[in-house]
Image 1 (tube, helix red, strand yellow):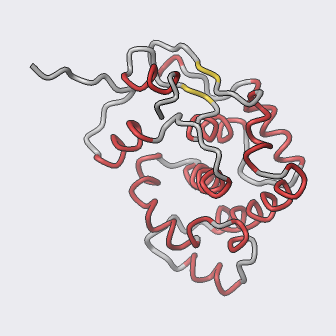
Image 2 (tube, rainbow, N blue to C red; image 1 turned 180 degrees about the horizontal axis):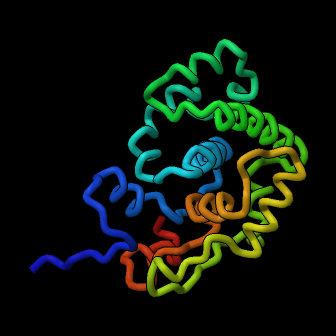
Amino acid sequence: MQKILVRCWKTDNPLYIKYHDEEWCVPIHDDRKLFEFLVLESFQAGLTWELILNRRESFRVAFDNFEPKIVATYSNEKISSLLNNAKIIRNKLKIRSSINNAYRVLEIQKEFGSFNDFLWSFVGGTTIHNKFNALIDLPSQTIESLEMSKEMKKRGFKFVGPTICYAFMQAVGLINDHILNCFRYKQIIKNKG
């Protein structure tokens, strides 16, 4: 008899299942990947994460695999091509904020050595493992996401409110918010990623 895996959320979308099982709340320390999630989370604002996941590969192509050094140099011509790209979310403010945020990441790298070091400082360098029984128990923001949002805004980042920062912190493993009976909760704690 096959054991049924308990997941945090129910979905039939294979991309969403794969994301839950392999990526959500898994600690990331690569600056490019961290920037990717920052961009994707900002585009997700007001939309569903499932929509973003469905367009993720198109975003990667459109945004040069989220290389901050490249995105920071985007011209008006590139912005126009992004605004005409039906495979991504065509929101001018979010596109411009992504370019701005790429430039801010480069500034952070110069000051802190890496974007990773800056971000992980908000959780003392280690994942916060919450203990929630149901998704409804998860907060929309925390003290840590408020602090991150405040500091990032002070440094000129856009689309980094405390709720977006909290979702970002979950996405990149600063926080483990898998519910207690989810099969991934203990795996994340044991650093099996």
